[in-house]
Length: 79
Image (tube, rainbow, N blue to C red; front, side, top):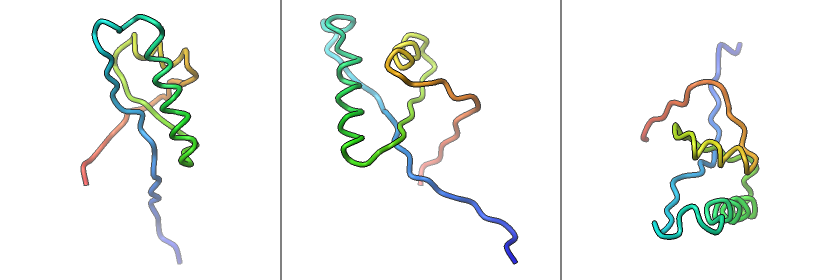
């Protein structure tokens, strides 16, 4: 008799990025870096990537490059 279960899923989190200050908001570097990162992740077998931000500008960028806002709260824990 099964009385319960809890699944575990390996997820890919799109983490922090850094761009030299004098190049920020120029040349479309952030979307290009993100596209290259996503391309690399896909080549390594990832099929779902998530990103977490409370910054409206970053959220708008993520939406422009195809991310969708997911309702709910995100919880984390170090292992």
